[in-house]
Image (cartoon, rainbow, N blue to C red; front, side, top):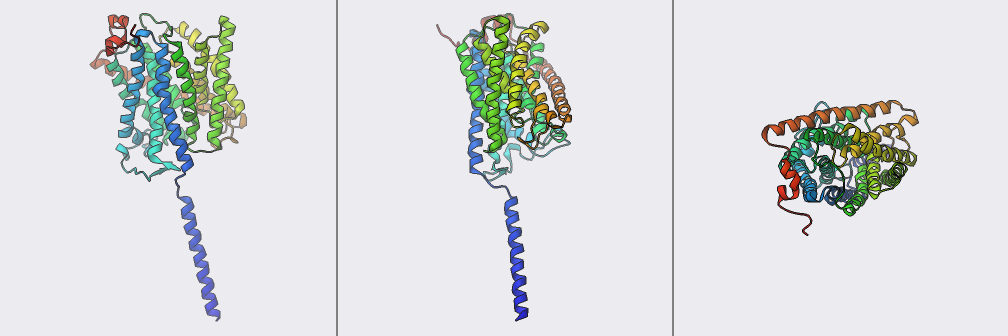
Length: 431
């Protein structure tokens, strides 16, 4: 009888141990979360909506009336190009493996090995790929604002292909794909360095190489389009920043709140600064402040509390105002739609201030200067400097290579006539 009882006890213990192991295996395996998936589907659509039509309308309204369609077309074609190349090799090189901290590998070319059941965390990997595609698309499209009214459309297409391949993909891997900047501890929640510093520096370098337009003033042909575009950008940015939590949770909600707060504060800061200096608060200024605030909070959205978001908004709105007025006029470069002045400058401000205000109670992955980690500021500055140097160098090389095979800039006659007619054979306003 005693032997039977011992055998039963031993068998029961084995069942418990086995059950525990099975449960442990089940809990360690990621599972699809329908709530996270739904949020990321929405976020992907929101970020796409930022580019088409948000950015296209924003830029189109700012351009001269004879260049509206060309300006809009640059955003559209950039998004289309990135949509194709990202699936072919962009996603794989950004997010598949890691070769010495510099670039991914070719394991997922054409999404090889990724099925509809493959997961990235708690969402389908194909959805994660799509979400990241929208980031790459808007980054390339952002650059076009500095080049409008003088770059040949064919040259822009070649530039978009090369810049996405040689600049965006490596930087995205460095920060988000397991590259050396992520290993260094650089914080970039939704694209301060990857998107805005990257695009801003490329805009500045390209504008310097292209040279000034014949009439290099900024007089919006349709301010209504600009305001509609800025509103769409504000709306879409909730997916840009909130979606970067890659989950439907409290962190996404905090990023959502921080985005709205910093944007509103920056718009007010720009308005007040302009009002004090010019004695008139312009709607164009408010729209510009909106974009500056959205840009600056992007790297910090999922790391800072509301106090940090407000400070970032104030500095982004006020400092960006001076960058597109005093600095631009003093240095004399023709960044047509102030891509560097807003995206570059506000992106740098936001990236560095993330190292100051990162609050571990918001996100345990980030601890900034105010919470006992001054080293984080140095890491953020280093990440910004590395991005600036690499992007500036590669953008310059890309332009030089394109120049070997084709003219980059339209002729004086084509510029005077307008790129809508000379590049596309169309007119935006037929009256």
